[in-house]
Structure formats: structure tokens, C-alpha cells
Length: 522
Image (cartoon, rainbow, N blue to C red; front, side, top):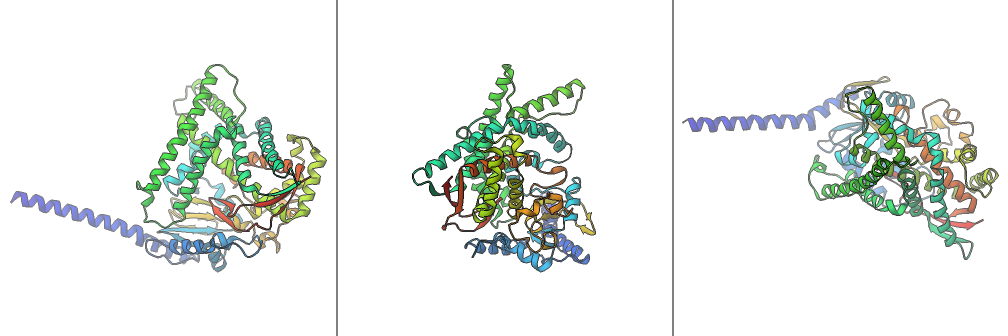
């Protein structure tokens, strides 16, 4: 009898646990989303209706897959409907503030500059969005931290991106560019002109630059790390742009296991670089002027200062954290500049007048000499061209934040645990902000500076804004100016007839079918 009673109790407990789990799942997948939808509609925010489990994901993926199967009919800068057709459709339908659904989570799209500025300034409430552990491992370090840890890492890393430090890396930038240009000269040696897809070479160039500038090594030494990071990026992009059962990405599936293997191999390679540098420091060698050397020196100084003040809290970065920051150097420093450069070459190939003006400025400033830092600061035409390329083809087309409590933003009330998207691509071409020519390539709009071009609005933010603005902005712009300068000194170029205009968003905005360009030796 006692045995039966125990079994009955166990059955009751199992039933209660099952019911409790069922209630939690029902709340997560239906009750809470419907409450959030009602909350948003009550204040007048438009959006799509919540569909159980998947939300709008099926429609989003279906529209995107269909759009990417064919290139654009003509060379136009109105490509948002190709890369994100669902987002484009809703922006036309609902306006500058609306919500959609990623599974059971509301995603609120905001394209009003004043609200974007307020959100980016309020780091406490609007935190970096956490998409998944896999995505966070691809972009570790400073970009994923919050609060005190973010502040400490930013303080340690800042010295590596000071202007004086960038000057010391100038030769590394120029050496990498010279190698690419030598290769191009060999391509056109016989006929003084030749066609090639510059996209692979641009990616190799920026990989080489970040290897030399960050680690003092050539591309060959860092090539394996880049190959592994490239495969990781492709895996993550595939996971993001495919429908899966919620929680699937957390399981030990084949793609997740492959990502982990890549992660381990990358860490081993970077750890070897750091250990070698530590040995050099312990041997009394002078601190190298590359990013890794400056980072390790700054970290060591931070630890020494804390020890001198008898500070008991954890200070400085651990070895694992230094590895994370190195990975971020590699990926973010490489991808951002490569996309900026390739779109710049494509647009200057289409706009020969601006290419000629930029070349004239470069020749007047440097002649045939290697660029120097002071001269780069006086390149006004080159600078406004790069700004206009960043406006029309921002490397990151939208930025995201996450809120963890009910939060007010301007007159909006945002429900807890919402994901907030700030579509850079929409704000950058908003006709109300930029004029009727917002979709046209007109670098002259920046001739009197960013503030004048934006009329004081926060409508230009390719590197973000506020306290978390990209720490590598000056690094990327310096590298782009050097590369463009050295290319313009040696070639004039035009788009090949085989070029197909087909922008695609693979974490960063890229030309889907490459960038075939005809180079002509000057």
C-alpha cells in the first residue's frame, strides 16, 4: 500500500512539473507575445500580427531567398528591397517605427535619428543584442561587453587607436598596399590594361594590413586564422538566415560542433602569437608598436597601477580576454575596411568624374611618393567620397540593441525583452533627411563636413554613435585613404561589362558576384 502511495505521489509530482513546463512554454510562445503585441498597438505602434512559434521568420526567409536568386535589373543604389525585402515592405507599409516578430520576440524597427541618438547614448537600458552564443563567439570582446567590464576594456584598448599610434603603423599599411598594386601591375604589364575581380584582392589586402598592423606578421603568417574565421562567418550567416526549431542552435548539431572545432583552432593560433610576445617582453625586448604590443603594454600598465593602489578587484584582461580582443581585431578590422574599399572602387568606376577629381587631389598632395599621415589629413575629395560610399553602402546595414525592462524612448514605450533594430541603410537614404537626391551618389553633400550634410541630425552613423562608437573608425578610414591613394597613383579604372550589381548582406554588405574591374596603367 505504501509503495502504491509513493508511486501515486511521484506521478502527481511528474504531472505538476509537466503542467508547470507547459504553462511556461505557453506563456513564452503565446501569452507574452500577444500581450506585447497588444501593448504596442495600444500606443499606436503599427506592426505585423504574431504567428505562433515562428513569428515572421518563414515569410522573411522566403522573401529573402527569392530576392537573392536574381541580380538587380540596373545599377541603382536602391537595393534595400533586394537584400531585406521583408524589412523594405514593412518600412513602406508602416513608416519609421514598426514591429515584426523573430519567433516569439518582438523586433521594433526605429528609423528616427533623434530616437536612435537617445538609445545609443543610454547604454544602461539599451544593451548590445545577444543573438545566440554562437554569434557572440564570432564577435567576442569589447563589442559584446557591458557596464564596468566594457569600460575597463575600452580604457585598455584606447591607446592602440590613438593618432600617434596609427602613425607608427603607416608603413605596414603602405607595404600591404604596395604588394597588391605590384600584383595588379603584373596583370596589366603587357597591354597596359586588364580585367580582374578586385574583390578577392581587396579582402586579402585588408587581411594583410590587419595582420601586419595588429600582429607584426605578414598575411602568410595570419592566413590560417583568416581562413578559419571566414568559415566561421559563413557558418554563422547560414544559421542566422535559415529557419530552425527554437533552441536548435544550442544543441550539439554538426554545424555547432564544426564551429567549436574552428573556435579551438583559432584560439590555439592566437595563443601562440601572444605567448611568443610574452616571451619577448620577459626577455627585455622593446614593446612592439603593433596593436597587440600596444594592447599588452596598456594591459600590463593597468594591472601595475591597480597593484600600486592595493586594488583588490580584478583589473586588466586575462589571457582568454586578450585572445578575444585579438579575434575582434582580425574580423572587424578586416571586414569593415574591405567592404568600404570595394564599394568605393565600384562607385568610382561608375563615376569617372569623381575618380578624376580624387586622382588630381592625390597627385597634388603626394605626387608619386608614398602617402604620409599629414598628407592624408588634407585629402578632402577622397574623404567626402568615402563618406558618401559609407552613406550609400554602410558595411553594417542595421544595428541592434536589447532592452530587459519596460523602457521609454522619446514618446515610445517599449516592452521588456524586445529587440530594437536601427536600420542604418534606411536612415542614410531618407529623403526627408537628405533631400530628393538621397539615392544618388553625390559626395559634394559632405563638402562642408558631416554636421552640415546632416543638418545637425544624427542621420549618418556608419560606425555607430555615442559612447560605443566603433573604436576602429580612424584605423579603418586611414587604411581606406592609403589604399585608395596608392591605387589612384597607378591606375584609372572602369567597371567591366561582366559586372553584375547584386549587393548582399553576409553579416557585412558585400558584392554577391564580385567586382570585375578593368584596370588601366597610368
